[in-house]
Length: 274
Length: 299
Image (cartoon, rainbow over the protein chains, first blue to last red):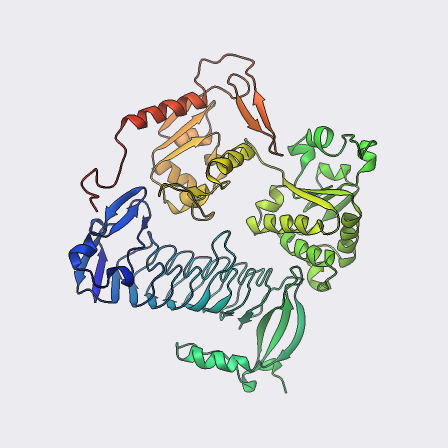
């Protein structure tokens, strides 16, 4: 396992897309130390900011508060990155495979436009997780993002496929302009959830304040949630999905687009379908 | 003509008489009598007196109302109870949609009451989408009512030099656009920059406290004709001539028409352009940073 330890906080954000198993695997430690990172306008060597130890492999561990280190694991296709501490913006953006774990918090644009792989944040995340970049048509097209704490604005913006699970509270515009995929809001969300959504599914275990352009459809137990429940159980997440757990109220919209998205709000045992 | 979240009677006093409401045109020979004006705001401002229809909505409900309006324009159903939370009824929105469709040429002017409240850029996007969709029925445009300073000019120049209006990063030698990451207020709040040149703005008076604190921490250089909140917390304040009064230049009107400015008075102070040119010359005398030149970055 290759271990990178942050030895000095960058004065301005560090752009380090070379911190990825695709780049480091197969390189000798000296070559890894010479990899370049962008510190503001200046291109620097990786070892100006990180101590490099261990043997090169697909397994990479970063120690320290990397909240000002951007683009870690950008477009990675394999391997594993574990960040013991916080992570900066664009973590796992354009990711195509592999696993990223963060023990602390992560900043904005986690897994933006990713197509495969797993990102797991133990703490809070910033906004735009799994989102599309400005001007881009589609956000994440596959893979899974799991956020243990709260999340910021525009989570899952324009996502097309894949799964995002947020255990804490999500701020405004969750699932903005969603085109597909599934967003699980286990801790609920603030306002304007599902605005402009075309397709896709948002599942909330807490009541949501919906836009006037969502219409109540029915209350039922969607059978497809059982499949998701099985998959999420392998990742250590449980969601109510059986009839005894209670029904979900289904709302469809956003009719201002007009779209065919659905929001499922769990009503608990009190409203279980007979 | 719809004014949304703005108070032109007080903030843009010449707007009604010179540019929008009162002016006579080829297809509006009677000026004001040929136009219908709607004002949407959270309180009855002096502009409401000039309006044919005033719609008072609850604070922070612009996005919800615009969502409902967009659905109604397309003939979609909306939830009456949720619409009522905006302070208006579905019937009022249907009436507004009918008036908008009946217009020969509609325009929406939206102010900071819309663009700077909760939702910010999404509120602006919503109103721009509404204007775009109205073109399925009639000609419709939307235009922002800008705040102090020549914001439109900054946007226009950034757009034709980099391709993006704001929030541009040039660190890698090419422009990258990402509002929220590279926009000024976000950079300052996160403390992502270690120096700042302020030109034609007073962020010390308008930005959030963490941004102001960061401006005070880092070397900030301000170019301004007068002492401002920002210049007080700057390391260097260079007094410059007032553009349009004692310095020539170009200002962009809110509809992006460039207006050349001719100075009426002389000033003992240099112009902004001259100061920036001299700073640039001084910077150019220092060796440029290039990969491999400074030893440390031999990669």
